[in-house]
View: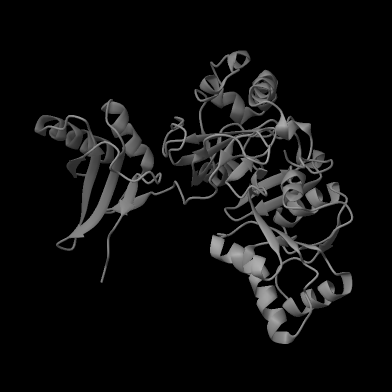
Length: 410
C-alpha cells in the first residue's frame, strides 16, 4: 500500500474509468459553449462520447496551433467561453500562448505530485520557478500551499540572495528545474553556504537523468520529477516506486501515433494527448508534441492510475527537404493509404550535395510492385520523390520517430 493523497488514487481502475467517462459528456458540452470547440464538434453527438474509443474519434487540437488561433481570436483562441475577468490570474508563455488560471485552491492539480514527492503540511518550500508572466511559479505555489506548506517565492537566479533565504528560513523542500538545484548546491559548496536543510525536491522543466537523481541523493536530497505544462498544470508525477510517472486524477491521457489522433498499442512510443475534466477551462484532446509510452500494470506502491515513462523526445519532427516541409502527418497518411504495413520512418540524408529521402517500411510481404505503389503515394503526399526500403516487422526502433533527419553539412 501507499500513503496516498486520497482514496481516488487507489481506487479500482475500472471504477476510475467509469467515473471519468460518465462525467465526460457534460465537460464536452461545456467546452462546446466556446466557438472554436463548437466548430470542432460540429456533427458529433457528445452524449455518446463515453469511452476511449469514442474520445479517439474527436479531432486533436495541437498545441502548436494555439498561437495562431489566439492571434485570430484573442486572447484564448475561441477555446474558452468565459471572459478574462472571470479568472484568477492571466499569463503568457513563449509562442506566445495565453493561459488563464482558474480561481480556487490548487487550480493546476499540483498538490498530488508534491505529496508523492514527500511534501507535507508545515514544510517550508523554496520555489524557484518563475513568477513573472508565466504560470510556472504559481503552479507549484498553489499546490504547496494547498498542502499546508509555506512557500518562499524565490524565482530563478540570484544565487546569493537564494542562499540568504535558505539560511534564514531553512526550507525542507525545493521546487524548480533540476539544473538550477545543481547550480545552488554547487554554488553553496564553493561559497561555504549552508543549504543542508533541503531534503526533498520536486523538479520539472528539464531532463532529469538517473545520474543527476543519484547525485542529489548522495547530497542528501530525495528528488522526484513531474511532467507538467503551462497549459495543463500537472499531468503525471513520480512516486516512491521510482517506476514511471503516475497520471494525475481528473485528466485523460492518450498516447497517439505522431501526426494522427490514433491511439497506439500499450508500450509503443507516441505523442501525448490530454483531455482535462475541468468544467471552467476544459482542454479536449490537446496534443502536446511530446513523446512517451504507457507502462503495463499498476504501481507497486498502490496508486492505480495509468503510468507513463516520462518525456521521451518531441513528436514534432517536421523538417525541410529541398525547400519544402515534410511532416509526421504526411507519413501517417502514407500508412493510412497502405493498410497492413508496420512502422514507417522517413530518413532524410544528403547525397551528392542534394537532399535525399528514403522511406523505411516494415512489411510482412514486401515486393517490387508494392514498393512502386508506396513511392508513388509518397510523391503524391509530399510533392517530393523518395525511395522505399523494406525491413522486417518490428525492426524499426520503438521511439516514436517517424522522420529522421540524418543530414550532415561538414
